[in-house]
Image (tube, rainbow, N blue to C red):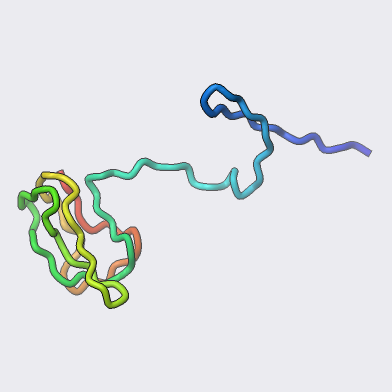
Length: 106
């Protein structure tokens, strides 16, 4: 009878090195990707009510770009920084899903 040898993974947090086993769920998960702040995604599924700007328009930080209605609430999509709208990927009345790309800024 042979015993299965556990495969240990090593990782470091600060100055401490840890030795542990990883389960399948942890091994198969997607790696973290740093979000691109120039791309605005829908944070909740809903309907685009109103779009205040068009491609090429200049926006200031805090300007309301569009309204997204979800669960009978009007959610505001604002410009996170000063810039120019490169592309608007939706139009008024569109149904959008969570994490769908709405606007690209430059």
